[in-house]
Length: 307
Image (cartoon, rainbow, N blue to C red):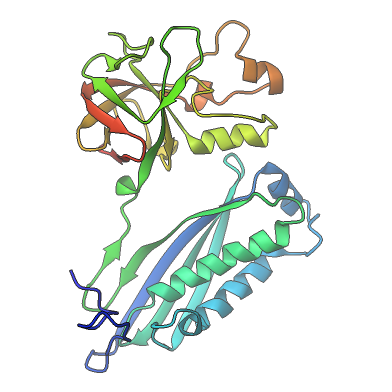
């Protein structure tokens, strides 16, 4: 595979598209900003000091799309026939999602313009809300669809998105806190080697996504660390709405898990976190799995939803 923006000497170059046909090009991109419940409530109640954030953010995104070639050094200057940005608010998980669509009749595509529109839309939301919250996170900005051009049609397959392992946690004895490790050996039909909760039951490995931990932070829990919710594997980017009983997950090159339970009851009158703030995410969002195929797992391994 060659980098088209480098010549044979490795020097940056603008790709020559003069011999390409002018065709209709459409590109769509999406992204999220995690703002939290406090900011979403302020938006709903029109209590932000800078006014209607979505109207301003949309104008900013459209203007940025038109200026993309001035921001990206080797990007072609193309005429845009249409730019639009839509958005949705996810109250439960505390984020705003934007989708930008760009159309053009040109000799090259509009992917960069669509991505730029989304980025600046989200960055404008950050700017208008930062008086309330400064630790907002912009994430998952990606091309989701494109049409036209030599490479043809492309659509992002969310099932193959880059969910990954960000922590592996093991309890040496039951009733003791889980300790993070860089890698672990997963044993077929048993669980993680050395973990006191492994065994022949259907709950051999537990998983929890970072988005769930962030929600608990929004409720005011401080000092949360990986393994706090008794999960063996902390994930990032694993969309629980796509998970159901029987879903298979491939971790790294070898390990395959099968989801056997979603959620669990906290012990006794509730776990420590539930007693503190009145709610815990494990009863709804904690995942448990059987090990169908064993092997090594490491922090940073990619997780693939097999179906």
